[in-house]
Image 1 (cartoon, one colour):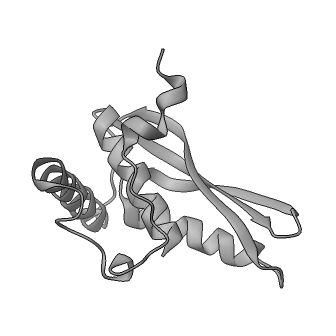
Image 2: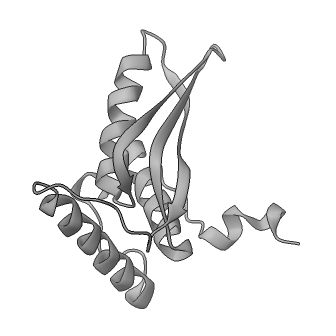
Amino acid sequence: AVICYLSEKIAARMIKYGVKGSGVHVDLRSFELRHASKQMKLSRPTLSSADIADAAFTMAMSLQREHAVRTISVSVFDLSPSDVAVQLSMFDEKQVKRESLEKAIDGIKRKYGRDTIKRANLIARDFIYDKDDDEDFLPFKR
């Protein structure tokens, strides 16, 4: 659920700034403060939270050992403008639909509030603290 939440936050920011990412990075820290990270390139640039979450979850499961996790970080790298043309294959219709859905959901959240639409695995989760993006980046705004 944490990876899905972080992926949705990343996708919302990418839509806001008009970029797509070609790679995903996951960073795990255990309660013993042991650190493990992994990154992977995606087959095509994306702004879909589902694609980001799938890649992040796969990498997190390959990294997690027997230690309890203290911190999970998910990030996207190799950013490019979202309006740059990308060669799609015949079978990429699913990707186009995912991105259209992601943009529609983001528009609804911006218009009616963040809690109007949620993924099923994020309903009734109490680990999510209530901050918005302006508060997240407060130290960087000068």
